[in-house]
Length: 314
Image 1 (cartoon, helix red, strand yellow):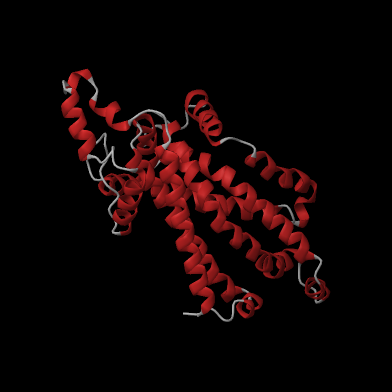
Image 2 (tube, rainbow, N blue to C red):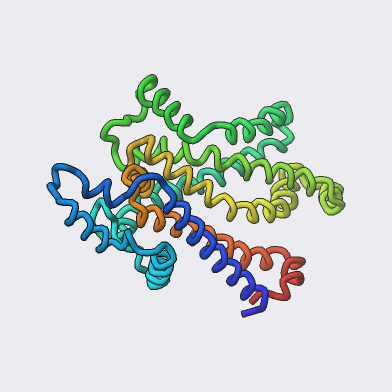
């Protein structure tokens, strides 16, 4: 493994540690006490002494530095602790809810990529010059739409007004259509903007003029020479969009009442279930680090100039 990859791997570990540390201390300063919220319920009938024992069992009265080290060491061993509200291991809650979130996030990402490519490609087609300004303004519109508002608007339009897609007891595929669109539209906007800007820069390069001089059609030049060379900046930003993708999926799950990490996070926030919130943040941070590390591995293969700059990552 090259020094470049080792450096990037070390930076990834630093990001994970920073995310854990920042999240841990921010969650600790939240008002209220999660143990008291859970066990001071009159229906449980627990005495003050029993509640004190529960606080001791959960380590709520331990010094903050001891809680930090204990949680960090446990997380390094893959132990996210126990949910205070559910009474289950957090890892089991994540495992049961993560597939539902991935079934929303992955199709939404694919749709956003397809939509970004379609907008960028169509904006430069010779036969659609009259639509170019309109197509180039669509990403600005998409990026300005809040995910929760877009979800509500889609439900109102397609479920209540047009009655095309049921929102109450939909089928497995029907229940994914509107949530996927709600997540994909805002994600596609920055990708489309980067692609359009990059295509404008590539279109004026000398090799494009040579291709036109050889008699290649405008569509062929656009597809074979312009689009291929404009992909690199878009690929680079795709890794950075993971955080927005996950956030959009969590919000959309809440709007559409879908099970997944979004609903789990909402319940954890309401009940101050710190272990669950910490785990969700760390899973998101790990995904961000892995995606960006993958992009760093792929980019030098696509652009030899980056291969030289990184010292030949192998």
